[in-house]
Length: 167
Length: 336
Figure: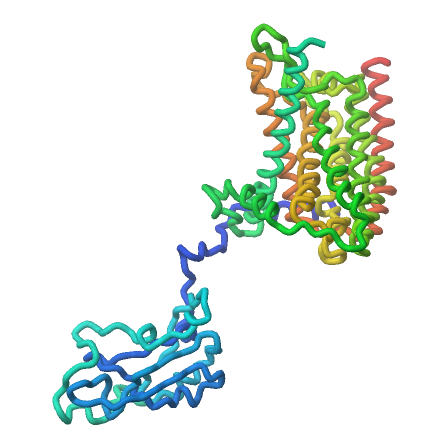
């Protein structure tokens, strides 16, 4: 019967009025992203505060969108940014070019660059789209020292000190 | 004609117009909120508390939009069409009684502009029919095939359903033995006409939904087939006028439905406190508006041929039978 079907339809819509809305009130309430979500990059540090990035530019080589620019400089024991010989003196990612494929993550020998969960990357100017090293580098962890730091000679000769959990 | 009477009319007109303008703005918000809740969303809630400033934001946006007139459009008719559509929607409510007589400063004042007009019901039908010209002309003057088809559909649909609408008016007219809206409402002081005219009320509701081009009869503006129907080419405030006409017509037909079938302003304690009358009327109008939005949220659009078939083969015979039965029963039990 048409009338019964109409009434059933009306009842369905009426009942759904009293369900909890599925809406996330976005700027105030953020929906959690998945663990492997590829958002904005971060340059990680070791626990003592040294940067993991050694300025090898493999990420730049792997990048299909050519979004990454790396310039390396020499470390010394007096002015040390990262373990090993070199560090990234310039590290820029152009967020207008980046396609968030995560190849840079795969290419990184020291697991320095990680695509994290921040997806709020709006800007009002093309120049703002270029994220410099200061923006990408994570803060110094508690107990660590800021870079550059003065270190004991011979303590951080290896670029890849010890892999905690090699896979 | 004395000055006080003139002043009274001016004030009443201003109040009705203001009610329709504000009502239009907040009806859009009401519709969006109810629709959102039925779709398990929240709806606009950012502009002001509970989104109450949303209509203001929408209006401001539309004012600053570019007013575009297509190069091949018939400019005069293109500009006139929204006005032709909106004016009937604004003046329909002139014959509606909003409440019983109240006395202000020793004067007996009827809440309603011309609610004792002896052809009130005819006036409503006549004025409501003018709106179809605006829509058809809007479609034709745009010089756009989708707009033209929307306008044509609208004309055919409104003409077809107007018959059933007019016939559904006859039930209350026969029962009240008057065409004056005030008499019709006064006659419902004891019981509402919907109790004796349930089929008439249903026919009235379906016909009005078709008359104001609302889902599931929103054929003239079927987004999927006609992009937007008769108002494709309209932008800015001209679009807002067409939109306002549609929503003001919704308010108007809801108020008329409440007056014809749901006892108008009658409710508990209206005899003692006449100012409760407009409040009850508003509640009834809101209930019918909610029903219209509810239908929109639920039902898919009719196919065009089925809409016409339904109008001519179901609605019209049913309305005719309803009128005949009502007339016979009125003669038998009330006396001619």
